[in-house]
Image (tube, rainbow, N blue to C red; front, side, top):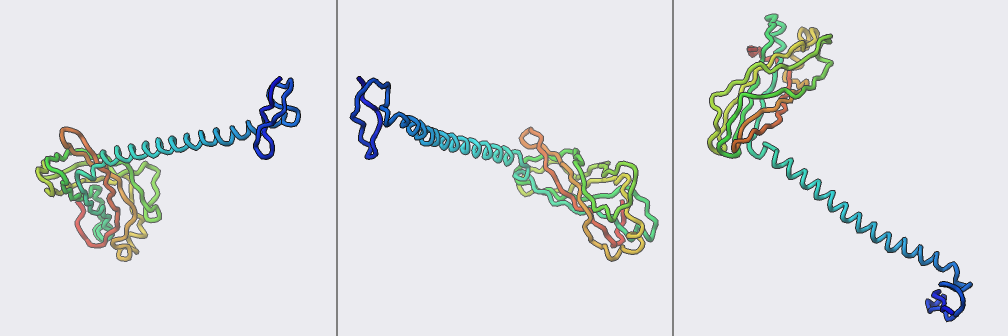
Length: 225
């Protein structure tokens, strides 16, 4: 004879005894309530704990990624102020200038000492507002043809130097209608940007920084290189 494990409405244990295994006939479905209780309490708690640990892990991962990103961010080592890449529209119109090499000056300031600039840079991409540029069936590109600077070593914090980049905008042509009729109106008008990665050494390790160079129209009659 076994005593029923069921509970009454006031949560007192059932006093019946009989040949049943666990519950009497009145409480034979009570195991479902118990099972549901276990699922929604123990299971829910476990899920909550798992969620907490998972969120913590995710936050730690994000934090690690952010930290790694910050450690790799060369903005902690140098600050770069780019000049503009300028298409001189008046020069194109008045002198029929067909020059294809343009210069851009980047001012580099050291945030740490003993930085070494490298004559190495890579054009990673560019964006242009195509309403101002003629269509071409060839692949357009801002080809970096040369890098120039007076010294490579920035010995002390706050030392600065101008880095000159020389570009050939291969198969990138300004629309003739803008050159002829809209040069003055488009003066200093931004029409895109060039993404260039500049390389330098710090503590015997190569670092790089991505620089966004504005592409603008000019009507200043400044000489193109």
